[in-house]
Length: 123
Image (cartoon, rainbow, N blue to C red; front, side):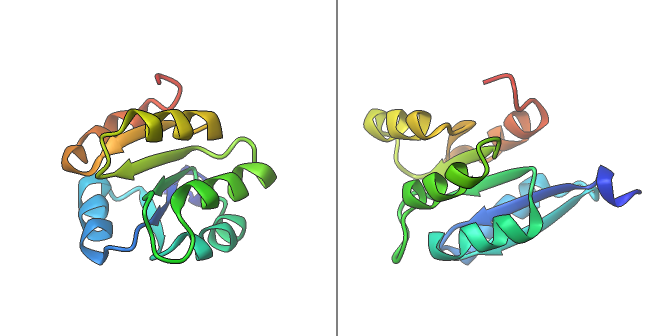
């Protein structure tokens, strides 16, 4: 497998168990995962690793996911950021869309991540 064929996914979530669940849901042998537990570290990890996708929680202690997503998109406008959250909230969905989010997945439906990641322009 050539390195350019590998998918790179950055997971930004304050819950280690959620990060692990996401990795287990998406692990296919062709994916490299990067992770951090707060939006504060998301930009640096994105810049360093240029992932294909960012899976971003919304509520985190230091820097929330919307703020981190805006920071990434301001510098990398083509970034694919998928919000992965427990909040089934229309206002949050609208904010995610206004930032340029590529998707909005509820944590109880992690299996939907496979569809969004495998068809990123289908949203």
